[in-house]
Amino acid sequence: MATTDHISELAALTASELIDGYRQKHFTPSEVFSAVQARIDHLNPEINAFYVREHAAAERAADQSTARWSGGRANTVLDGVPITLKENLATVGTPSPAGTAALADAAPATEDGPVAGLLSAAGAVRLGKTVMPEFGMLTSGVSSLHGVTRNPWNLDWTVGGSSSGSSAAAAARFGPIHIGTDIGGSVRLPANWTGLAALKPTYAIVPVDVPYIGRHVGPLARTIDDVARAMQIIAQPDERYRDYTYQERPADWGAVASSPYDESDIAKLRVAIHTDAGCGLPTDPEVRAVIHSVGKAFEEAGACVEEIDPIMTPHQFEMLCLFFRARAWREVKNVSQPSREAALPYFVQWALGAADLSATELLNAYDTVQAMRGAVIQATRSYDLVLSPVAPVAAFPADWCGPTNDPATALHDIVYTVPYNFSEQPAATVNAGFTADGRPVGVQFAGRRFDDVRLLQTARWFEQARPVTAVPVWPR
Image 1 (cartoon, rainbow, N blue to C red):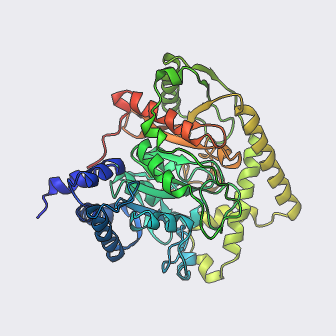
Image 2: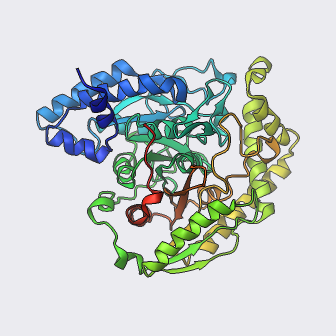
Image 3: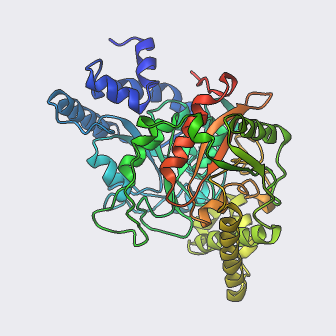
């Protein structure tokens, strides 16, 4: 029988380490599956990361992968690697209730979505679906359907949202790679508050079903190498072309690890530091200090580093929030009254802010969002890299619905992340430090569209160069 230490050791391995171990026959995908399942059994009851666990199907997939590795037929990118998908990424036979009791009776999906299909074809072992908060529109882990998802670092801290279960699973080491979605920061914010690496890729290079303005699919992991490894699989065409916005852009994702950046590469960069969002919540001094320390590391490596002014106006942010509220109100209005009463009151109160919005007001908000998109591109286009906080604050209480727990300021922590959803630029996160009370603080790296590989190479350089005090020691 496997010992507790052996189970912990296997569950702690990155995807890259797992592939090396399979190749060298140190262990099998079936053994890793058993170790990760044991860890989930032990920790998930208090963390609440999973919406659905697919134990039988995952066990079969692990055994099939073991046979492929034994027979020399494995796909060496993710074959046998445990992964999860966020609740709203379709998998056949499983409903997608969007984290709300209002949609508790949602019908099961009749087919796998693009990302699910790509990962299954690659031999990844899908452990199940991870939870999300109410309608995927909160930056916390609070759901009327699933309850509260908690941070493995400290159960009293938020895990972030809306890829709340994804980040909880990654930080708890329920497998190395977890796929989330991001329409305003929903991959990066949870990664920030749990010490993870993550990428919101350039818009439309990962197929999405159903596509929507600002919506991206991206990986969360404990290392940039694993983020890049996941992108090798999910940044491929959907054979059924269900995403009409998809752009096929071949990229050498393997170069992130095989051709790592060094100081000579960093010295060629023109870097902006952005620590004043100009709207939303004020940036906490501890968070700002961490970002300036990252800027100093780049400067010491020879990069040209300069600070930039806010790139989004208060009016633009107000109109963006109104646009999101209108989208939320549509969701609330489209369900029956009994279903609406089952939804999280905080969310309904926030959505009601757009209940009386006219068509003209909605179009004005949309036009303002488009103007913001142009402003972001203009403000950043002369830089190779923009460094900023991921969020203006560190993790707030787990049972709060947002950073202030007030619907009036529900999205006031997305001011650094959301610009890049609408400008379609890639943005990655890496842990960069901790607050005095131990809460993780990430740095966001934003780059030019379709420059995702170089962005990850840059993020990986910092991940390797950061001080030991910024390296996460993962909760046991």
